[in-house]
Amino acid sequence: MAALVRDEVALAKAEMEQKAKSLLRGGIAIGAGAVFGVFAVIFMLLTIAWAINDAVGDEWLGFLIVFGALAAMALGAFLFAWRKLRVGAPKPTMALDEAKKIRETVTAKTGEAT
Image 1 (cartoon, rainbow, N blue to C red):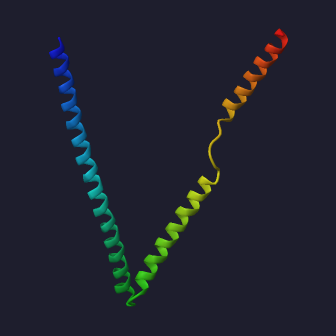
Image 2 (image 1 turned 90 degrees about the vertical axis):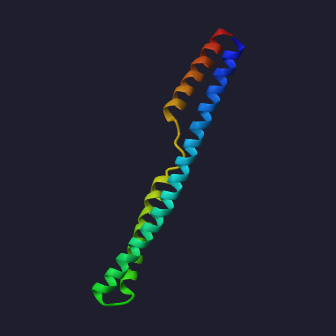
């Protein structure tokens, strides 16, 4: 019986090690994909800037336009996050109200009994 339990524990341990290795490999692949994605976005923005430069015929205007668009999006994201985070930590108002009612009820009943 003890050997059977030991074998089951060893099997569970081997299974967990295999799953952990698989999760680690998946995490590394996600990290690599994120790095490649960031570089892809950078090159896409550079391509857009150079395309605008070619279309307009000016050497720096495309980069200025791309910078302005990125700055506007960053400002919009900041303002959205600030508006959402300004509210502060959520309060369980219904639970607090119920707790006050329960405390008042218990206090009133305890006061009557004495």
